[in-house]
Amino acid sequence: MAELPDKATRLIEWYLDVVEAAQLTDKRYGVKGMNVWTPYGFQARRQLDAVMIREIEATGSVPVEFPTLIPQTEFQKEKDHIKGFDAQVYWVTRGGATPLDIPLVLRPTSETAMYPVFALWVRSHRDLPLNVYQIVNTFRYETKTTRPFIRVREIHFFEEHTCQVDEAAATARVASNLAAFAGMARAFVLPFLAIRRPEWDKFPGAFYSVALDIPIGGARTLQIGSIHHYRENFSGPYGIRYEAADGAQRLVHQTTFGLSERLLGAVVAVHGDQKGAVFPPALAPCQVVVIPIPGKPGAPDPTPAARALAAELTARGLRVEVDLSEERPGAKYYRHELRGVPLRLEIGAREAAAGTATAVDRLGQKRLLGPQGLAEAVVRALSDFEQALREAAEARFAAAFSVARSLSELKGSSRVRVLRWCGAEACGREVETAIDGSLLGTPEGPLPFPVEGEGGCIACGSTAGTRWALAAQPL
Ligand SMILES: [Zn+2]
Image 1 (cartoon, protein in one colour):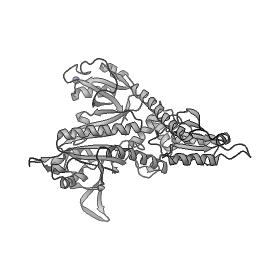
Image 2 (spheres, protein in one colour):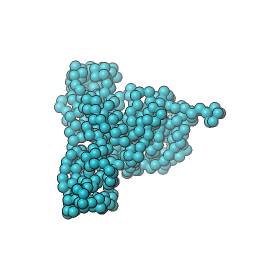
Image 3 (cartoon, helix red, strand yellow):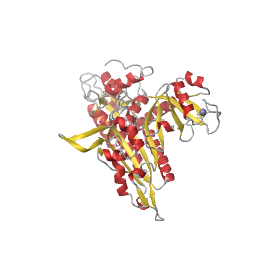
Image 4 (tube, helix red, strand yellow):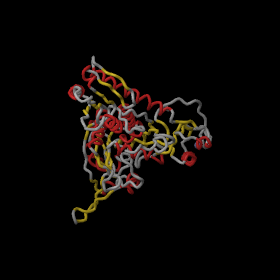
C-alpha cells in the first residue's frame, strides 16, 4: 500500500485515501454520493449511534420512525423551507407504470413528514413537551463534489423534532440539545464551537440556527451538526395547536437538532495521522487487538494466552479482536494502525510465560503490562490513550484561531478568524470577501478561548451591538 498523502498540505486527498484504506467505506457503488457501509464502517456507525442515543435519551427524547416518502402537498406548506430544499429533493412520480396523483418527495429532512401528524398528536398542554428523534436515511441531490461521510446524497441522519409550550421553552430545548451534544463531542474527543449563524445562512424556515463547527486545519472548518429554533414558523402552516391551561388555543414553538455520519468523517479528519485513522475508544469498532507472536520453531505457542486475555477483556465489555492471520507481525501492526485501533497487545512466548503483554497505543506509547492485574492495566492504558488524544486535540483546537483587528489582518491569516462584527449583513459580506470564505456567525455563549480587548466592527467601526464573530472557509 502506497504512503498516504501529507495530511498537513493535502487534507482532502489524505482523507479520501484514509477512509478507503481503513475499509470504512466502499465508494465504488454506481450512484455518486451513495457509499456502501462496509462491515468495519458499519460497526463504527453503530458506536456513533449508540453515543447519540445515550445522550439524547438522557434529555427525555424518545425514538420514533416516520415514512421515507412525503406527499408534495405536505412538503410545500412552509414556503421558506420548500424554497431552501427545492433544488435538492428527489421525486417519486410513478408507481410502476402509473403516474402518481400526488408526487412524493424522498425525505431530505422530516419536518414535513412529521408535522401533519404532530398536529394530530398534540391536543393539550399536557401533551407537551413532545420530544422525539429518529435515525433514518435522508436524501439530498447534492450538486457539489461528494465525499464519503462528509458530503453524501444518502445521509445517515439523526434528527430530533420537538414541540414546546412557548418560545422560552423552545430556547431552553436548544440549550438542552447543546448540552447533549457536548456529551457526544466529549465521547468522540472533538473540541467544537457552537455558533449562531447569520440570518442569510440559517436553516430554511428557522427563526435561528446554531451550527456546531470544528476547525479542520488552516482557515477551514467543518459543520458537524445544527440545532434550530423554529418559533411558530412550522406550527402555523401545519396547525400544531394546543389548549393552554387557561383554555386558549395556542401554537407550539418548535426545535430541531440534526447530526449525521459526518461526525465519523470529522473524527477521522481530526484525529487521523500519516499512519491512518485514529479512533477514540468510544467510537472504535475494535478497541483492543491482541496479536500472538510466534517464537522460534519449538517455542511455546502464545496463542492460548492471547485468547484467554481477549476473553477476559471481552467479559469486561471491551470490543476485542485476536489477530490470528498468517501475516507477519509488522504487517499486522501496519494494518491495525491504518484502521485506527486504539490499543495493540503483543504477546510472545516470553509474555505468555510471564502472564504479561506489551501494549502499544495508537499514538505510539509503549509499555509492559502485568502480570498483576493485567486486564485492569489494559483498561487503564485505553483510558490513558483517550486522555492523550484529548490533550493533543485540545492543543490543536487552541492553536486554530487568530484574532483580526482590521480587514487587512483578516486577509493575512491562515487560521480561523475571530473578529468584531456589528451584525449588519453588508459588513458580514465584506468579511466574507476579504477571506474568500464565510462569516460563521456569533458564538453561543462566551468564546472558547480568552481574547483581550473589544472594540468596533471590523468593517464599519461601529460599536453598537458589536460582538465577537468567527469567519472561516467551510469545507
Ligand atoms: Zn459593521
